Length: 223
Ligand SMILES: NC(=O)c1ccc[n+]([C@@H]2O[C@H](COP(=O)([O-])OP(=O)(O)OC[C@H]3O[C@@H](n4cnc5c(N)ncnc54)[C@H](OP(=O)(O)O)[C@@H]3O)[C@@H](O)[C@H]2O)c1
Image (tube, rainbow, N blue to C red; front, side, top):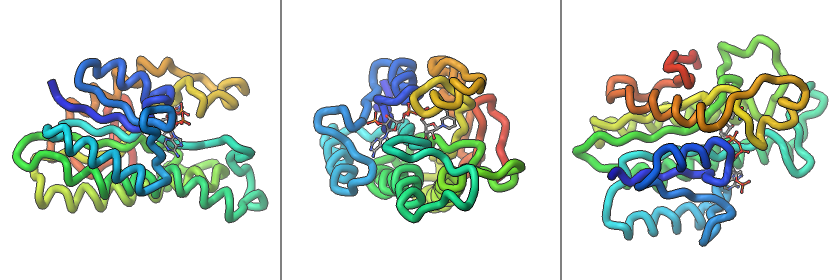
């Protein structure tokens, strides 16, 4: 049984990932005991200390936290809607939080065995793929996340050559995050399908595939 950590286990995709992994999965969320807040480095460090105390290195870590809307924030349709507060919130949750998980959890990965680390990014974070604009803060924060992930993958390979460290796009999935857009007619897939696809993609990747951005169907997404 591989110790598998899922951050954002209260979310649509995070919850489905915990269920799909089954025994060995440990979830972290703000609703957990103790609560885990990705924007609070002390909370991230405390969670890492607890995992270290288990005495077994995690073989799989998935960061399934993220924010597109909430608490008065909706994705900007125009640059006229940009505010420093909204941009900072998008970056805090979608980029800086996962970077703190990299800082505190990548050192827990085993050195001489295969191990996988994935962050859930989003295709809209691809600069190459951006043909319609909008969603300034979310897109920019996911692009920043992709760059952070890429650097971490390069660094990780030096000490853990068997590691796989990737960004994943889950597809458009039914969850709180997509709910306002699903209501507006966006097609969404069940979280259980997304979780099965993501785990299938991750299991099929080897160290030679590290540092890249993959969609749920296994295709590579350009940065
Ligand atoms: N759904 C889609 O269509 C879609 C498409 C592309 C990419 N993604 C990405 O997939 C990931 C998962 O999304 P989802 O659809 O499952 O969304 P979701 O259901 O809204 O889940 C988001 C998760 O992030 C957690 N979170 C937010 N702020 C946090 C904080 N400060 N500290 C700790 N946890 C925090 C939430 O916890 P709380 O329950 O405590 O709020 C929840 O567990 C995200 O990175 C998202 O950007 C989703």
